[in-house]
Length: 327
Ligand code: AFP
Image: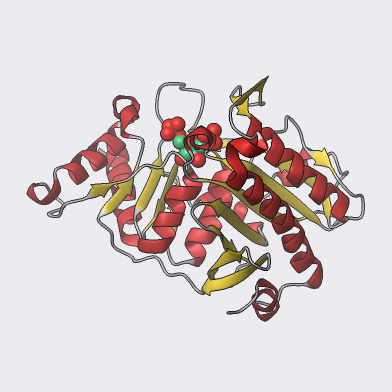
């Protein structure tokens, strides 16, 4: 099986980017080890602190953030880091060529129930003009991302990665500690009969999403003329892994519980990296209005509504939104 290094070289990655990805993965391997140890490593349960988003931090959120922050800051490849668990950007090395954005531990509510969790990351060029503590430098559209991926700490530890030459799946071989290519050039089926949404929020959604999901639920008796299955893992990293593996549509729409928030998911830490992976695998990733990768961020912790996955199904969902605007 091909090693990560060989695939990255084949994909034309510059040496420094390869070294940065490997450094990041060294941190993820440590997280994977601690996740595997569970209670034995004292990683379960909550802390008494909240992150900048006002969410109570789990111990593993804090530990994972610290592991990645330490390893990336010391690497010399990174100029600054932004993290879902940090209030502001973390300056790293003045000569670093890259910016890294991370959701150190996605799916925090799954930690204590021994269910799917993961680390999501994306890498961009550090602009020459920036000071290392300048959040402005991170306000680049997702289309400028040079690499993005996630590590999923499941029954096996796997990584989905793109550097803009396809989306590739690697599996951590714990016998020698390396990531091996287990499926290259992932292709998401264009059609699907599976959707993922937190249906408990249904009464808060806007009408187009109510109508779209309503029609999926009507199954073969409804306008779609086929039955749909629903899955919800409560960790985007798990849901997107399923979508990349066998197709599907994943959405976390705007809802009116907190009218000032455009959605739950974060543009830099979740939506952009997943959009890059999905698009490189032939899928689509949009808000109701535009391609996620084209959004110009206005702040590092920005949130967005998300509709992504199998191309034809995303198009159908978007049609409901377009039609609602016209009516
Ligand atoms: P946490 O990491 O804070 O648990 O949030 C996970 C997440 O951002 C995303 O990964 C999930 O898809 C979504 O939230 C789950 O949201 P619900 O709590 O509404 O199920």
